[in-house]
Image (tube, rainbow, N blue to C red; front, side):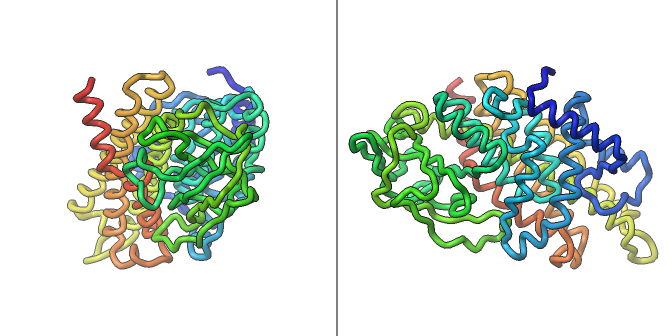
Length: 425
């Protein structure tokens, strides 16, 4: 693997962690598992399966950051709805602000597979915060992939450092799954576009600095959609109230409102009419990213459940001694491993520019987010009443990953994408 500047930073930082003797805590667990070394390694070594030495170093660095900077605060951030900007900027110093953006203008220059490995590790520490990081990374990549040189020079270095935070604006109150039916308009007026309309459920909205807005510059349908970059503070841009959500509480979610919002024409990303294609290409990667976040939650939940069931005694023995519990844990571990493989296969397909990538990304998102939610739900069940308490992290993992079955295209839409790829092939 050839290392870009950001990749080298990650490599050096990972080795520095190892030299200092800082323990790498897989999935941010708070204590060692009360199981045999062989059993523990089957579970805790799972995320490292098949990785190169370099990828293991990236993973180690992300695991350590998750254990020390995310996991100790995830419950506090959830309860108080804290958007931990300074913590994310510390993550950016490790190269996590623009992971798969090329290094030409300051990105880290790693692969999609590397990013999936990193996001999985980080999400074990805090799913909600990592999920926002994935969105920010996607926006940085959009500039790298579709922007002109001026846009790349303006935005990518600041995105990589997270001095500027980004939001992706596609969903509207009247167009969720039917994204091509969006109604936000951008009318050309001299050297400006004038935007009118609104976006719904936008992660980071109100607190972030740059908005990638899919809007209608032409006629109906996908070919009439363009992508325009709108900066916070632009007259005519405003935000709704922060939504009161089940999970993802460490990132704000608001409506983004445009009322005669004048934006310079040079803020057009790509070409007019290219916006829907830009949006869908962004979402392909976003689906792998969010599936990776589900993997991290499921890994952490499984490790914590093995620890709990090994320590919890009923009827004079640890509940893990019951065959029914052992079988359930075995099923959970198998589903987790299979989910990880399908996610990494989709990431690899994107790296290889496989023409089947959209269908493979949809498969990964469908399978992994469904299976990982089931794993975390089973983990909560095995914790009994304690799993329902907010003193335990299991319930937060459950709340945070539930939305992964909805966003980046619902899992019902994923079935449509997959079947279309099969039947139109």
